Length: 247
Image (cartoon, rainbow, N blue to C red; front, side, top):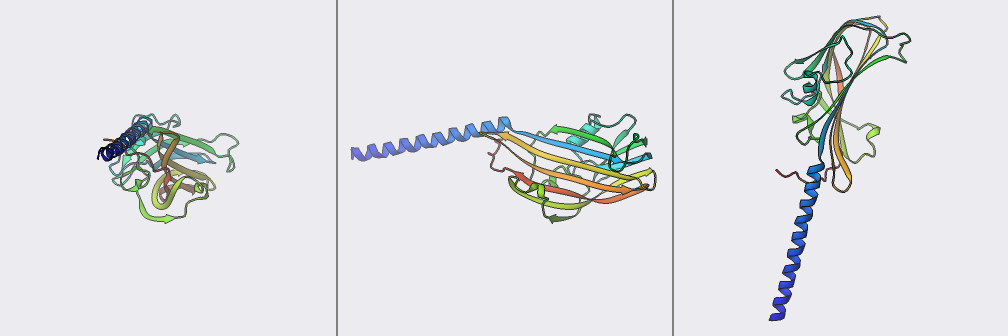
């Protein structure tokens, strides 16, 4: 009987040690994850033209959640978005289902030597941290994207996402841009905007997950109104085996 008790007691001690070790390991991993976790948004917008534009007014979507909030909007508000030329006026405009940045300037004057192969480009950018973990799988519902969002459809992912970790899912939807300016009949104007939301952390190796959202519109000659364009969304990029953040 004493031998059986000793065996049972020994097994209990082994189980207790294994259990305590598992808890310690989980606690250690969770703390490393939480201490290294950074959630960041990166935003870029470019406006390019090969010909001088006059009396310019643009309404370009700014990525936001359904309530109209985002770090991009905050930085436009406090004028900390970089790359806006002197003389350009930026104002945020809430259209209900979308938030736009209204850009006005008397002219966009291109330097000598500008042509379709070498356009004049204005680069606007910002980056900012999120206080919360970014939803990189389903950002359309509650997350920060270019809005309005209409006629969503799933599409094949572009080749540059082949081989990336995770299981990317890609979709397209319709959104809109407003442009009012005068210029030569053969002028071309391109507006691009992109947003990347990324979670980075390190437990034993650096890991991440992210989503990418972008829009593109090409216009020719003068424009005096709204243009419907397609926005692209790629989600589920990266690793999703991170520990659950404790409350």
